[in-house]
Image (spheres, rainbow, N blue to C red):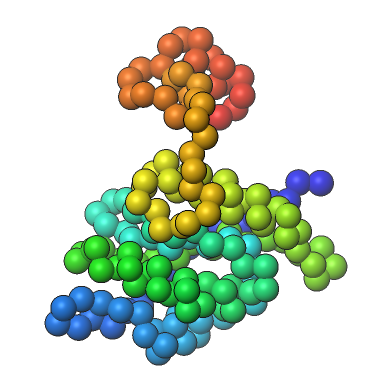
Length: 168
């Protein structure tokens, strides 16, 4: 059976704005979970990003096999977010959550890990400065016009193959 994750977000992460920059305080974290109590006990993956203009810049991808509340703002994760925030004078910090379904109260940790690996690879492709340490080594192969290929118009064969593979 396929594990189907559901996407929640983007949810704005509150920050304290000082004279020289911003930071995420313990009070901000408390306020975040008060605003999103249904997500606090869920498990899955999360993506920290900055919303600027009409798009997003990804900063960090993580997984939570205990709960989002226990893991998304853990001290070492918070340090990554703070590091990411100092590079952006403008923009709104946000979190996306990809919630794993439960079966008899349990989640499939193997699927969560697989999703995290996938999201890190997609994240590095979108932002080579992604702050994750593990899983960021990109594959050394590609498919011309489909995956990890140079800019430009894909060939007719590549477009047809994409269609056949039902990929975007």
